[in-house]
Image (cartoon, rainbow over the protein chains, first blue to last red):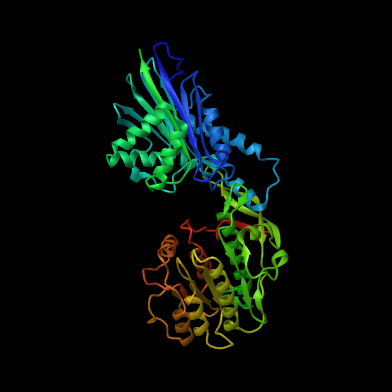
Length: 255
Length: 266
C-alpha cells in the first residue's frame, strides 16, 4: 500500500487507552500506543517485562512505525525493526551497567507489535504483526478479521516477539504476519495487547455479548475512567489476566 | 572432591561443582532481572561441608547463611572476563566478551559430615518457612561424593522433608557423584536398581519430583516420570549440571543450557 493521504471521503473516530497492571503506576506500563492522523497509521506494542529496556523498545517501535511510509510487508518490517534495534542499542552504549543488566542488554529487548494502515478512500487496510498483540476488524459487532491470532486458545506465555537484536533472533522474521483487507462504512478496528485481546476472543467465543458490547461502548465513548473500572472488574472476576493493557479503537465512516 | 572425574584427569570434581554452582547462581539472578533491576523472587543459601560446615559464599557475602537474590547479584566474590559464543545471524558463530561473576571457590577438604550439614540446612529452613508461610516451599539441592562420616542422615533428612509452607513440603533432592566407573541411577521411582544401603538411604530422603520439575527434566531429555524422586546415584558431570538445572526450574522456564555457550575463562 502506498502512503494514504488523509481521507477526502470519510473520517475516523479514534480512541486510545493504556492501563497498567493492578496496583502499578501508569509510568510502569510497558505497553505503548501511537497513531499518525497524517497517514492513518495506528500501532500497539507490548514490551516484554523480562527483557532489557522493554518499555522504551515498545514505545520506540510504535512511534517510529507510524511515521514511516512503508514497513508493512514482512521484509520491510524486518528491516525496520533491525534499524530501530540498532538505534536502541546505541542509546545504551554509555550506560554503566551491572553484570546482570549488561547480559540482559546483550540479548536485546523484545516487544509484541501490531500496526495497521487504513486507506479510507480506497476502502482498504494493511497490517503487520509480530507477537501476540492483535488487530480485530468488526462489522455490525461481529469479527470479520483478526490477526495474527484469532482464538483465545492460541495465546501462550512464550510468543515470538520483535527483537531489538535481530542478528540473534533471525528466526523471528518467519513469524511476521502481513495482511491486507477491505473495509466498509461503519467498520471498527481494535488494536489490543495480548491480555485484553485474549479476553476479547474468550468473551466472544463464550457469547458474552453484553460484556463485549459494554466494552465496545466504553471504547467508543472514550470514557477512560469507566473503561478502567470495567477492566478492573473483569480482572477481579478472573476473566481478564492482570497484565498491562493497550487499546486503540478506530471507527470508520465513509461518505 | 579433590579427585578428578573418571577419565578426566584435568578437572577436579570440586572445580567442576564450583563452576556449576556459580552458573546456577548466575542463572537465578538473570531469571530475576527485569530491565536492570533484580527482583527478590528467591533467597539462596549455599552450604559447604568438609573440614568445616558452613556458608560457602566468599567475598562480601561470606558467613551469610541466607542471601536475597538481589544481594547475590550485587555482591559476587569477583566478576571475571570471559567469552561467549553467539550466533552471528548468518549461520555462523562469533565470540563476544562477557563479564562473569563468581561467588564460591572450589574446596575439597576433610571428611563428609553430612548430618551436621543437613542439620544446619534444617535450622535455616525452619526459620525461613516460619517467616514465609505462604511461599513456594524451599528446594534443597544436596550434592555429595561420599557416604556420611558422621552418622545416618535419614533422620535429619526426614526432618527437612517434614517442613512445609502452605504451598507444600520442602523439597529435598540428592545427587551422589563418583569418580568410579559405575552405572548411574537417575531419578528412579523405586529402589530396585539400588543395591547399596547408602543409596537407599538417600533415595528415601529424596522428594518426589513435582510436575514443573518433571517438565524441566523432559526438556533436558532426562528420563523422569510421575513418581520419580529427585535423586541421582553414581552421577557424572552431566548429572550434576542436569541436577541443578532441574532443581532450579520451579519458574517453569526453559532450563538455561550453559554447557556449550562459554568458550574460555580468563
